[in-house]
Image (tube, rainbow, N blue to C red; front, side):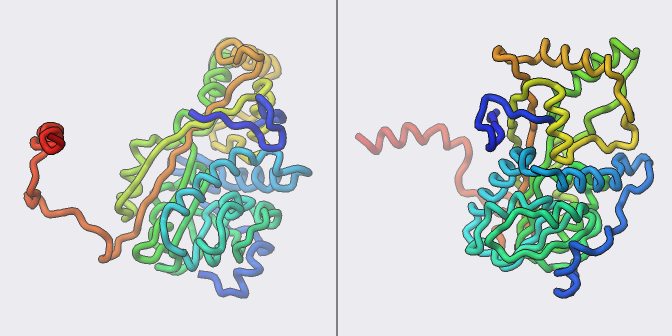
Amino acid sequence: MRGLARPALRARWCRSLWALPPRAAANAASSPPPPLAGASPGALNPFDRRLKRKQKNWAALQAEPAKCDYLREEVGGRIADRVFDITRTFPLALDVGSGRGYIAQHLTKETVEKLIQVDIAENALKNAIESEIPTIKVVADEEFLPFKEDTFDLVVSSLSLHWVNDLPKAFKEIHQVLKPDGVFIGAMFGGDTLYELRCSLQLAELEREGGFSPHVSPFTAVADLGHLLSRAGFNTLTVDTDEIQVNYPGLFEVMEDLQGMGESNCSWNRKPLLHRETMLAAAAIYQEMYGNSNGSVPATFQIYYMIGWKYHESQAKPAQRGSATVSFGDLAKIEGLLKRGKK
């Protein structure tokens, strides 16, 4: 688990909450918002995508939007590190759910020659962080990518896909727009994210109101990610997890920063209002159960990182079954052979 402090503060806690034609693509950021998947509630549409767009647009228009970007910038840097680990230059890349460009600011034009940024929130694209890479901004839904098949050498995505209603379809869309031997590198929140906040709110509601409703959105389990990526057509998969813990003065600061990140709950079954007494009880429970010795409270963000490749005949293939020339049983003899060789 790694700790993180908001870059602007450098303190023990972070305060304050929780394929288009070239001409058309260049003007896409100012075009009308696209139709969204999950515009009505249902078993297959757990999230209100229109509300999520409003939340992200609101966050991007705040006087200091970068004040709450510390987590996105940190994860964006870790995605960029994984891109740098691949020793090749990508002529054309796609950033799915780019927001204000949290990955692009860490990349170089020697690694990515041209980047297309896609997001449902037009204000986030308009207020994007400057990058040395030539970029084109496109307003589009992650589940309906407006690009032709076999277009991109690289697709990246950071902390966006956890709000997608149809994650298998989104993975298939990403696989489709990748060129053969192209790679997808992504990150999304995991199931243990904000467990402290979730437990505190549930206990407070049970105590004050006799029941509880979800206030933290559901997340994908890590065991399902590899299966979903494989079903979408990716191979040579890598999935790993990490935890980032951020310390805040209290529960209300956690929720304030989540709102500033555009990460407020947008589930259809969310409860529209929390009573003041319930919120005060939740803050007290949070402090009592999880509080640090210095008076701050931790918020845990579990991050799933994933890498998947689109098949190409040049890629390494597994050896045929039974073709091995060395037995795993011989591994136990290696130490003895090495000692004998030294003598």
